[in-house]
Image 1 (cartoon, one colour):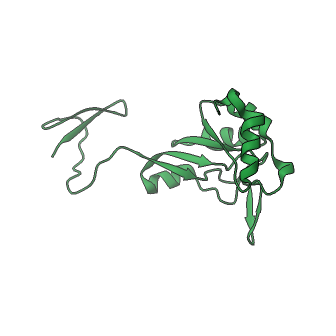
Image 2 (cartoon, one colour; image 1 turned 30 degrees about the vertical axis):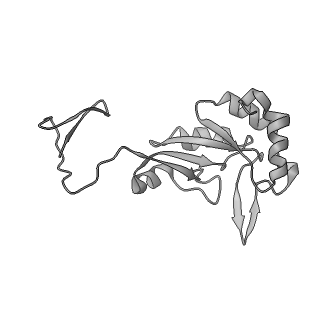
Image 3 (spheres, one colour; image 1 turned 90 degrees about the vertical axis):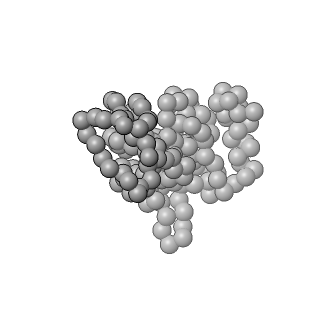
Length: 163
């Protein structure tokens, strides 16, 4: 058995016989750092797949959520302002190359992904990604494998670190 001490919200010491102002007996429990969920959709209200980031993280022990394509370059600013910046949970993003991201499912009809090439906005996605490097960790493209190469080669290229 080990004790864990915290200072300013971070682990400051691990060892036996530590003491502090607040103690919690976690005997019989598993103590782990916050987990990272690598595939979520937390654009609540922006996509029919979206769940509330803080509610989900509290139930899953994930302190970092990676949203995989809920927003595209056309609605990322709203996602950032109304969801990410208000969440207590850390949210990182794969920006969807579709202008509107994934915004709806109904009766097995998907709207917003790469089903309609007219919705693809590769250059805009690259610009939004470059302007939001603090949150955007990649670009998502799905459903059209040949288009993925077009996106990478023509729009993103070396500007976003793709080779």
